Amino acid sequence: MRERSPHTNKSQKPLPSSSQKLKQPQVLKTKYQGKSGSSLPVEDGHIPISDELGNLYPTTISVREGKLVAYGDIIVGDAKFINDYKSGKKELKVAKPKLWPKGIIPYIIKEDILQVQKEALGNLFKELKDETSIQFVQFNPSKHKHYVEFLAGEEHCLAQVGYLNDNSKVTLSPGCGYPEMCHEIFHVIGLFHEQNRFDRDNHVKILWENIEEDYWSQFEKFPEQLYSGGFSEALGPFSFNTIMIYSSTNFSRNQDYSMVNIFGDGFEAPEHATEVDYGRAKKLYAPLIN
Image 1: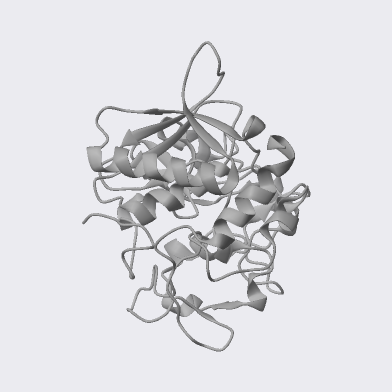
Image 2: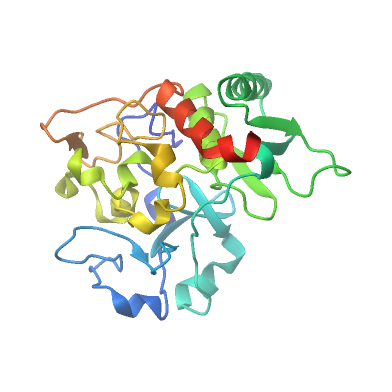
């Protein structure tokens, strides 16, 4: 079975055998624990384990394409360390995203990426520059310290979020089309999923009974501290018109809705970046570019 992005497969599920549970030492003691090991404070619904700075400590991950993946398609580590993370020897932390210096994102596209995907990436880079002034530029070791590397994958569309003070990776399977690549590009810029926003309960209702427990982390509510320092202001109000939101049947276990709007209606994710996405990216990076 080939996994597709939330934008093309309305009942998307990761491969069940890939789900792994982690022990998170120290910070784990400050939260109630659900039976899955995920943070489940009774008074506030499903939220991930986090610290006072808003750093996330995932307890449910998947091993995909040799990477550790959390919250759906976000690369958070190297699979070679899985045993250390599962035992609690090492602590897996997802920090608040950093922005790429001066809004310049050096990149390398590996030769085994499909030609149609290379062309699509080129179009995406141009659109992003035209709309936001953020620039994807070919990596030059004499000019750039770090870069994002686009790799061919077998089944998954994956990305790391924001600037890492290190090289970043995006994995594209043959099934990753324009919507999927656009979604991953906005992860690289520094954006998380819309349904994980701290204020999402004012706009959507998560139907946990329709979602298998292994996939609850896809819909956890992130802490407000994760969006501090200008992120919240740049993101603006919650929106259904963003490439970063799941459609309302994604990860449903019974073909019913996994989430609906507050009126009980389903919705579809856009197939392309919208004025909301470009506006957010532009506001985020304006202080670095202007």
